[in-house]
Length: 266
Image (tube, rainbow, N blue to C red; front, side):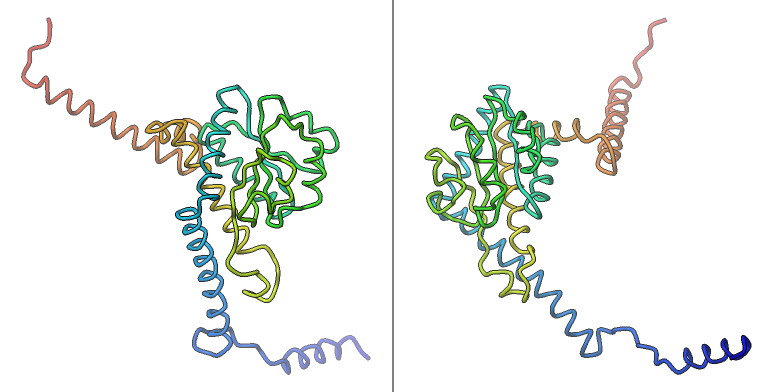
């Protein structure tokens, strides 16, 4: 075959291929995709609604939250910190929780379970507390870390169980504190796949609930000021600076109006 014939054949093959039209909201495939997408959001909303009701009405969940706030407050007052431990998607939830807590002046750090067993257990000090995040409540990597956490260290857990006695991570810790983060139906039932979705959404929400409740207990009306101090960067920081500048300008204007007409000293 000559070199001149090859491009021609290539062009003919390309020309013969049918182009797939873009998916539209008006065709059946597009409508099906949109319906599935909305189902994901609706499922997450239902799960959040259910866990809200749990913390509104369930004595165990409510007491667990209060115990967690008091525990971490005592840890902070004693100069300690909260170590948050998780792996996989729960580990990412933990990292987000740690980052948010730091911005609100809550001393904490992330403890990776694998690194913990290779030396990072040294991060755990006498005045600290450890919080595990695990949907199942029995993740093997976390159970392995738990074996090396001194009994004097307070242990908290965010898991799908609703009673501490049902949570493997707390079973041998009579003083263990549970923050329930259950979902109303398994993800495989909701979406046909057991990829962490609804469960991580609820875990993040429970972590945020703990963070903001604790921040209010620690800082009360100064929470906003603490956050601004710890978050000077990004759009949030720029917005805070702009508002501060506007307040300064307003103060100058008020001062000028107050002293208008007064003679300046010679």
